[in-house]
Image (cartoon, rainbow, N blue to C red; front, side, top):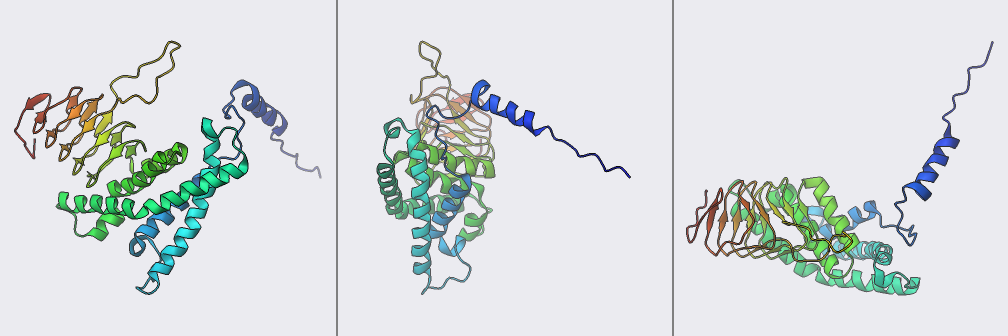
Length: 306
């Protein structure tokens, strides 16, 4: 009786082809050959740990008591900040100023940044509470704070953004982008970690919201699904490379409402107290108190339902 033939995958040629693509034809590795990369799984655990430390009764252990909650928060913070420090150390070599930094210096700097982020957590929590209260005040369907904390995608996205923005300002843009892209994947809300967003910000429904890197948003602003605060153009230098870092996204002043599907492009200013109607396409500034509906501006007339 003949033996069944052994199946061959042809692995030798596949591996050789992948090596040629990886090393010669289609290289994607960092120019300095950095191999130790930040871990998406670790960053997810870091965000979960920081979220639990800030809101332990909602995201922490289910059996917490008044006696045990501080112990839980301290223990969670210690392990989470230690993990964060390691991920920061892995991210720092991607910055030009740390390209040749020795390992000991990277370890020291990563610890300092993680420690500073930990010190900022009470202030970050205060901003998040203002966002939660804005959601409760702005949504008649909201039954209580717990529902908002556990269920609202806009609040989930802002938790990630408040942490990511702090890391961005502390000089770790790669980890900051990682954190916001995790929220983007989960909610469909895309906020660049560089965007400056003041207190009491509410994203209602949320799916499809895009907020660019240099956007500045004032206090008590409310936006609905599919709103874009984007760039109008992308200037390039002499060799065609896009110029990075220019202020190219909108400024939205305090108490502005932007309804579903509105697109606001460029470094324009939406004046305080304005209402931007649904599906409006706007590429110029509007004065305070304006009501914009399908391209028409009515100064000083604020319609809550354009």
